[in-house]
Length: 433
Image (cartoon, rainbow, N blue to C red; front, side, top):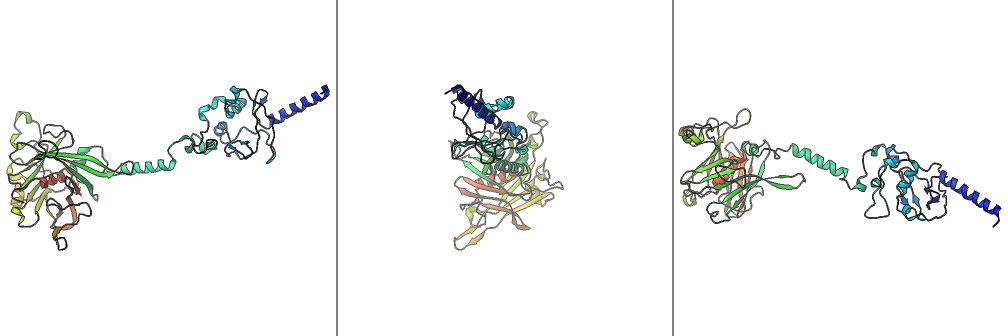
């Protein structure tokens, strides 16, 4: 080839380089990559065409500038392809990402790092998921590409957290929850499990009360509320109640109430953690408050069950104008709940009775409607109502399995009161069965 022909070829090659540079081709020095450019909208992702060429989308610098893209500089006509000779790149240059080379030429390498590149779908590794483009995407990564929590799931969790924050069954102070009356209009559903395992638990079992409620994940959960156990070496039945499932001692910090019965098991009194008024003068009790009475339970004498199902009366303090129970803090015997009931002095007290069951000819047994919360028949099953409203069940208790029971209560009863009354039903009663 003569020198004139070589000169013309070099001029054509230089012209092609100028055209490629003006059309936005990617260069490393004088060595071009093999690329064809098809004009697309700014939001088009970088994908493979059927002929093996790439379609370009807006780069990270475009996102930072609100959606404008740095290429192509001079856009060819629609569907026009600019064919480029295939020239092999050095190995170290082939390893670099095309966006790195482009932004290096544009002088924007400080605002873009390889870690910001779009990630690839696990379904199609050759199809990158492009981040969003435009002002709406400022400071916000593409959810599918970066693996963040979807926005709909985030909203659902936020709504659930807001609901739980206003749910009266979610609390921070356990003692405050179990000692106050149930929220009005809410039925608090609980389960009681009886633990007879161990050498002496057959005679002195432990009982655990758990609240049933909806958790943060939307699923049902059970939350511990109270534990109780029958004390040993007592002349009559005596139960301790605590807010700690691992500490069932009288001297523990979690001790909150005590249930005591008479010798034959026909009457029970529930106290808080205060001091017996007869022992308040002792040195170890100086400065401690006198105990309050939270409830009393009376069972009608029914030897061998000839009188039919159990009959029980429950007396609890009435409610004041602030919807809180009156304090019953007797210092002498005649001011106790049981004595006031005997004498008819019921001021500031609320008397409740168990709902009478009805006889069912088909099953040949007494039945009550527990609305699916009780599965097995038992003499211990009961519902507590007020005489003037037989349909408003303040407390119901019943057997589900051999050692599992349900306990549901409503205003004006508290968890401690309800649990104490149910413990009285567990206790054996010589004159009632």
